[in-house]
Amino acid sequence: MGPVFNFKQYQAYAAGQGLWSPSGTVTPTKKTQNGSAGSGGLTNGIGIGNSWEEGQHLLLNGRGEVDKVRGNPQVPRRMPEPLPYAAQALGTAMIFVALHLFLKQYFSPDLLLHPGFFSMGFAGKWGYLVMAGICYRCSFFFIWGVAEAAVILSGFGFSGWSNAVPSRPDWSRAENVSPIKCEVTSSLAQMPAYWNIGVGVWLRTYVYDRITPRSGKPTMWTLILTQVVCAFWHGLHPGHYLFFVNAAIGQHTSKLTFRHTAAAFPKPSAAVKLTIEVLQAVFKQLIMSYSVVGFLVLQAGPTIAVWRSLFFMGTIVPILLSVLLSVLPTRSLRHKKAE
Image (cartoon, rainbow, N blue to C red):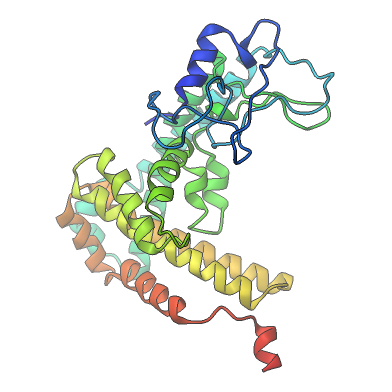
């Protein structure tokens, strides 16, 4: 699925208004009561969810942020020539498709259904799944990169100007994935912020926030139900549901881990910070590579067979950690010493 756009944005683009007007002028936006600019629905022009004032067409980019022309008033507001930026996005996409084709020769998902995979050792299976997951994600980096290039080339991806000096054009509306951030982030909970960005904004706005308890504190079930909705529109293959539910458990555990480590080490030393980030990165890679089996093989039987060969560690460990961290108080070491 490609980037998600606001229908109001498309209307402004098609009519040559706002950011896309020949003069480059931007119609000022009104503010809602909570101080944020409005949107007429995040996908397909369906005006569901929050009600917004008429005429606020400028305003959410793919990350759900308010679009605006930033920086010095002297900065030219007309949209720049998009071809160089589209070429850059397309070139990046070509790198990822080449990487995908190279890795697929050695880490094909087909081996997960072959006895050769089950004859590997415990560490060998995990390593294979990590590389197969990276190979699979590269195919999406390619697809979304091509879509990004197309949106930029059309001009629709223009989102204004940056605050940098000199100011630079912002094409973030067209961005639906941030490959480097997606791979190098150490937190499993942060990874979705860089993956399928537009859909993530839609899910958070119209599912996650709506089913959050009135206490205002989302639970693991809030995340799981949101992921089930995401799995449903991917299709009816059991593997989709196994992936999203298991990933949701891992993400919830990652959030709890961050909360406890932040409380225990409010001002960590460089060594402690590095240790925490390395452990989080290892956890992210192992849980994602374990969960993605459902996406790779799609069927429940083969997915469970692979998980069983790993003793269901990618499910049991996050659940146990989640239960343990949920009952432990988040007190800092400083408070413990004071006691």
